[in-house]
Image (tube, rainbow over all chains, first blue to last red):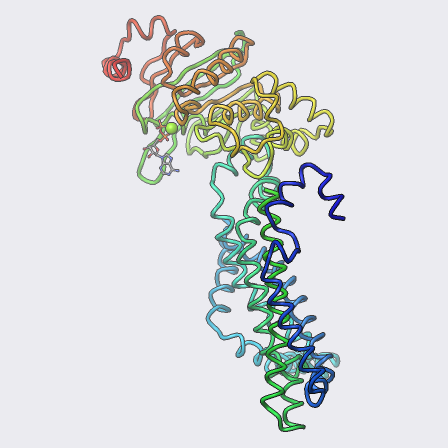
Length: 274
Length: 245
Ligand SMILES: Nc1ncnc2c1ncn2[C@@H]1O[C@H](COP(=O)(O)OP(=O)(O)O)[C@@H](O)[C@H]1O
Ligand SMILES: [Mg+2]
């Protein structure tokens, strides 16, 4: 694989100057390995309670990853539309997207999560009663789905602003040159402005992923069995807070450090691809 | 030089309180090369930008190649016929020179990749930098970037080319290479509107020189008449300033 890379002349430059998933190029991978080693060590040296915790929290890790990855991709899409809306000349679209961004950014994520989980089902049931429509009357919140919606809506607002400022950072002349060649506004956005804006917003996009991963622990308060909630359940059953939260913290650390490496890899590679 | 290709009638344009164009009339014949001069802020850029509707105007009409600039469809049609070269080049920074030349050919003219590539190569040859096809704009000198920008506009086979101070952002030693390309284009019979204070180019290539001031066309004449015997006091004053630079 390395051989192949080296034979391709135009890849050679990026190979030499970094941006590979390679410990020699990016020594921070050692930190990821160190944290994994500590977890393995703890599990082997003291299976009770560390192995028990890990086994108990296993499903929680999957839930955390599921919630994080799905809300991340959904919020990227929402943020793209929100950001374009914030730049729209259409007053209605501009108004709606601005209102969305301003309101959502003014309310803590925890409050939004609780509101989506406890208030939205009641509201839907009331509408059901009003319409006399059985499926709505019997509506029950699906915790994971509700959590994903809440995080998507909240992070989508921040992402909208990232997208907006990214697009605004591209000189106006790029759009004008595209339009003067006869491209439609959509084509100019699609082929000229957005690809350049994407490079600008890539670093903050990566930061958002890591922030979202950490904030996903908030979903534990709305009955989602993520790592944090699994930790709380384990602690109340076994009364060993020190070991439990040490392990929970280490598990999050592996995830965030790993994500940070991937983010940095993607950023470096996009810089070399130009 | 038989038929009018651009007909501008009584065009007014304002930016808030600023009246950038105060009733401009101009007819450009096919194959004509017009150089527009005038002080900064006199509306030269605005006039060019109205011709391909990068700016909207409030009053008057512009007809390009028989197409009035009214509906969106017509505006796009006119933009396909009118190429524009900017002071700041505005090459697409994320694309190679080759891709810069091919993008609009494939997306707007719907040409095949092969055809677009063939065209692009010929044009790079023509502007004298075939070896830069795979470079990115940031790797080129200003003069090279501007020549690529000219080639990019030509790739659409425009009937008219607009140049807005194409050499003002260039280091002196690069001005000639760009003017040479423009002069060659003029010789081939391209219809050109050029905002530029390069008097040498105006004398050599222009059929008509136009002096603009405060949003109006003050004077127009063939270069030999214009530079030797300007009739308006404002023109004389302006010429005395730029010719003694
Ligand atoms: N986008 C704009 N917004 C506001 N005022 C503008 C804008 N573009 C041009 N103007 C004004 O219009 C007038 C003419 O500008 P311009 O056509 O750029 O002049 P020139 O190209 O001859 O220097 C100037 O007073 C300028 O300040
Ligand atoms: Mg100007």
